[in-house]
Image (cartoon, rainbow, N blue to C red; front, side, top):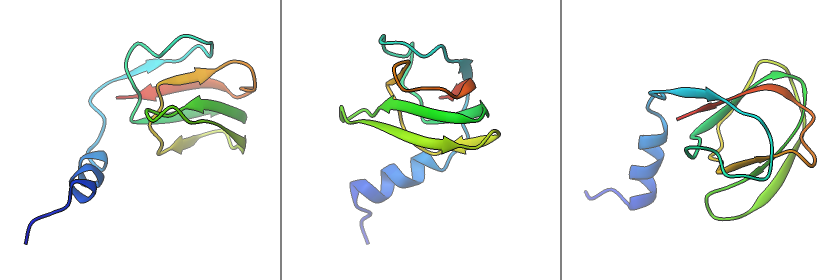
Length: 87
């Protein structure tokens, strides 16, 4: 049976990241879109997704891996620290 594009995309997201970089929240796009984020210091994280949706994740615990794609980590409502983008 043929796999749907959504199923193929889901499987691709399950692969480990091949690189990572520190994130400084701001209004500019990340140097590369993130496949996931790691939050080292607890707080809120505001992101923009590849589809253009902006959302705030509240009360993210320190040491959390966020399995969400992001093109921006916005400083306006981000209080979490030590954020790392996984690509």
